[in-house]
Length: 531
Image (tube, rainbow, N blue to C red; front, side, top):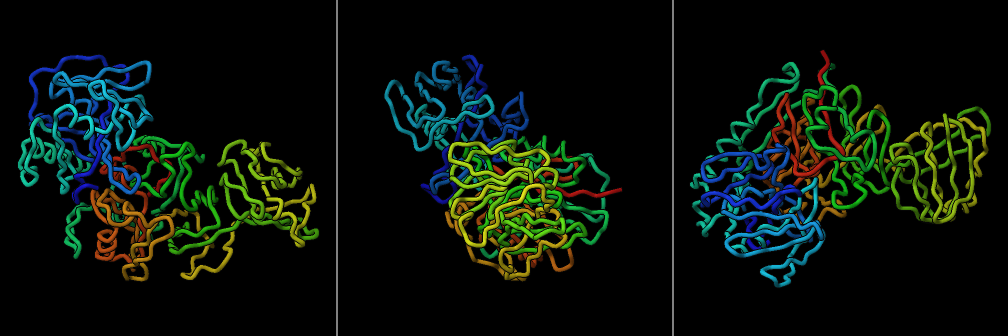
């Protein structure tokens, strides 16, 4: 980033693909937009960023070690007397203001500025029938200025430069802050209130700075309370708008986003293991900080390394095989992967080996498979792919057909914190660990050492457990990992872990989305209270 408080953020425009150039009225002096909020302020007038969709919100992302903010601000350009045209030949957009023009196309880092080709830091991107473009680049090339107010996470686009120290006194910022506070107040409950689940907002003075937070407190000792993990449609690589996840939850009182996932890849798999309704739907043999929750409200924290055992149970000679990973696409010669219907109906073979098919709890097929083939995943069972080196070991047993088998997860090695799979019905994963045994934990999981996971100031989600059996679901609009550590400890957590953040930061409570994500999600943690 160029400057500390997100001055290096690259912002983004979004516009409906069918938008036609319509000249705007009198030009405005400033437009303010808040991360995670569907509202924007044009001078003192507060309106939706997108009148046709109140789920369109600005959000922060991390890319190539830098921080970027994506802002759906078609209204901004119009507010300053400009307009946007769709370019059918490229699927891109042509932005015009004061006789200047910037043209961009999705997926390309090349832009045309007044007829000259220029390389941008990040490419334009197409999402949900809209084109998102780097608005700092666009704004500056169209003669506008962009500032960022970090306390309230508000982006200000102005006709003339604005003193950074005076941003909070701008009429647009004041109007937007007032609107945000109004809409964040929980409205009519969708679920009857309960003393076992509560919500609060507040500011917390920490050694590393003051942080505002939204907190859902769940009393796990109440037998009427249950906490469940979920993935969209019970299928991997399925995402949905947060509002749809909430509405299809079946009456959840509270919902937050959970696992990190491959949001920028074509296959949007979770990072780390996930268990839903007592069944693992995804997992690899590499351990990652995880939270397991039992049906009776007990919690386990640790870094469990989980394998998946297929074993005969019909009283004959015992045969068993282990799946090192579950529903991952990567295959290697000395490994094995178990594929269930959560993966879909089929999976490609990328490494030669053998495949065992189980239907209805009975072994029905076993054959050698080659690269380029496709494995069919039965809807009433699963298929275990095993690499050529895996099947070549002296202890490997060739599967007998017609055997009754069961599949069960188990810990490859004992977890140092005593993490147990016994009774666990929900499991999610995150990183880094924030609090461990009542003290701040500074260990960083491999793959989670970049600035976006540590020093960057960004929206974040965390979950933790107190000594008296309370589960805390926490969402912050802006914090570093060190601030999250201090916050969770101050809230009384004995254990806590950081979950996905940035554009994925989401929280719902009792009829109100109090933190709106900027992208579709896949894995969530949901709280229910029975009558």
